[in-house]
Length: 484
Image (cartoon, rainbow, N blue to C red; front, side):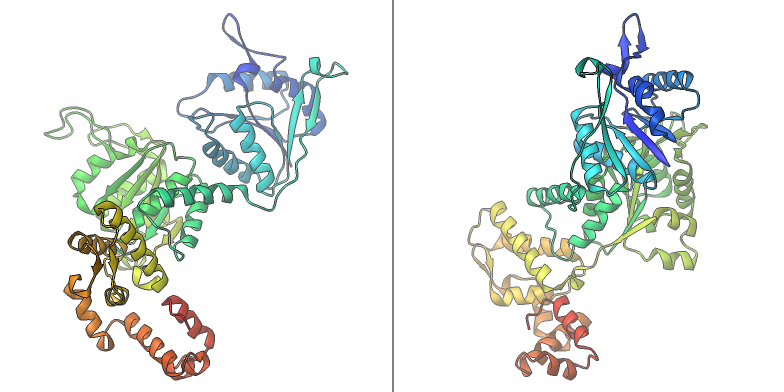
């Protein structure tokens, strides 16, 4: 199976004189005349930057011309929806997804048509995806010694370094340093999975995790790393709205649909068209809203409240919940079919208490640094006992609670933060550390005391604690950030 893929070139594939006509000397027609037959392609995937909903008369005109002139050749116009022809990341993500659809083919990429960003995206995909691709470029007859068009293969050495990962990593690092969010060591694998999810255009995603773990930030990252990054990211808290209000907010309404509907109003799906809609706390919606949302995900269409006709929308849905949706499905309070639609891929964010001491310390330092700058308090720091109290507290409110805690004590302290400045819930837990009912605190304390008793001998400490395997013991040390 062999495939030709290319953009069409509006500037060079058409003549703009007394209307618009296909140029028979343009690069695409020239390729068909001189090189197509010898290559024995199964089809030609011809790309346009337009959206399918908007249409593109030029690509349809070119495809029709090629079919008439060469009726046995298969030309397939593909609408790529690129609203910025020089946005490298956007273009690369789009063509990467298309190339991966044809991973079983031998693929010839006609490199000549397109902007420099389009050409560079072909190069990156050719060198990084590991597919059976060739980069081909044509040379017009007037530039050749033979005075006939020539076809050249661009020879490059493919690299084992995945360019897409390098670009994403650099982008991730840049955002981490420029925003109020820290990616700690335990989060990096989750965000790497999210980067891969972002490349799977159109796939819905369900993010689970307790309140305060950063579900919306992760959803924004998926959006920013996707081909939809130039579109809107619209966030909706489903638990804050009743059925009637949520339905009208999501799908919009027409004039006269209800008492206060004095004019047509678009909803969040319309607002997010071409981008991403984040449905937070999806586990809290009613059976009625579950049914409406399922139909939208299945059909890609919405019906505004009071309307009779459906309307197509191009939206990627990312949902999030703190609930155990599978258990809700088993209990009959959440639809299995909706769950399967939402959870095509799943990402899970760990609560802060499971992320280890190393993560906690990194976050404490990060929020302290932020507080020093925000409140102009360069000497702000934690005493040893205050830090221990914070490290041993389980933080049921997760990262959000930790950030609020540091901000709170920073407001009332200029220099060293003592335990007396901390909320009583933290100091009370520290004083009762050995009698705590929180398993993570008890287990961490037990490991620390065992290591201290056996003077760092892990084998003896492991036996004393009761773990059957030393690997389990070492894994626990790593989990709690305990230095042996």
